[in-house]
Length: 70
Image (cartoon, rainbow, N blue to C red; front, side, top):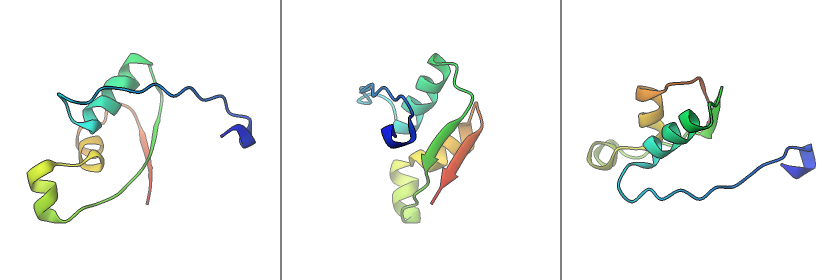
């Protein structure tokens, strides 16, 4: 990011009680973000059904535009 002259702040978040997708959406809301940029990754259907997934959560519950790359 620094190579492209972007200022970035890393803020660790505790995701013990909620899913990672919900942590991302909550953080975006707290910061009044206009866009979420993430990598999209899929797992097997059985794993997605049992544990869910960040990609699925963001697609189903997005509150701001999401740019995904695979």
